[in-house]
Image (cartoon, rainbow, N blue to C red; front, side):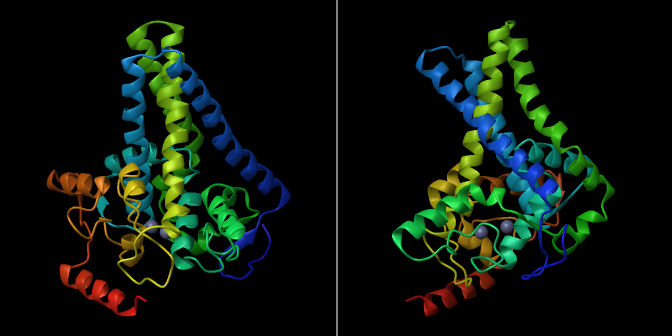
Length: 314
Ligand SMILES: [Zn+2]
Ligand SMILES: [Zn+2]
């Protein structure tokens, strides 16, 4: 890697590191897409079972629970604490999402918060110009192609706390194993239920590949659509928005304007009726003493910030 360039902590990758990054990103984009095409074919020709549908939704839950509760609210924002065994569960589940190894994920995400919608934000849809075509290009870039860029967030700048945790470094290195486990597990369950090669294959397609594609498309809408369309109840100085249908699909992550207002909160909802499945699950896990020290802003702080936003809104 070369020397630091402005903004702080962003490095240009050397040709070999860039090839590895792009190969890894393209693989996690294209293989699930091929699997999704196979799933659509099986659906249209009636060649699927109830087990396949159950596995799709089961692993969709593991995938997004792992990303939103594990990688995002726990690891990137330290919004709560938990025991080593549950941390292992969260890190394995989050890695199964195939969104990159832990240090990459956290460093990228923290950089997104530091520079939200300004130069240095790794995936803002708002830095590509103002015309219609430029807006579409920005939305597309923030959705997927940003993963192919030749820059990287320096771990020692954006994730120094994680570099000191040997257990987390182990999970970072086990990333390929966890991604593979996220494909093997549904395949094994499908075979155990159906006892045929076809039952194993369709379980791989639905619980593994199509699940990765659909869940990640929803997750990447948080970086693209939720910095462009929706409501802005809080003035965060960025373009983050709350978008309900993305929030439903991503277990609360679509409440992006709330999250940028209170990034350290374990909840993304600021009102009880805002859809935040991960926040609700964390409240339940807190009652079971599986997680603790759940951080959230006081009602008064939320109200103050909301009133301030109304004052500055046009
Ligand atoms: Zn954001
Ligand atoms: Zn965040």
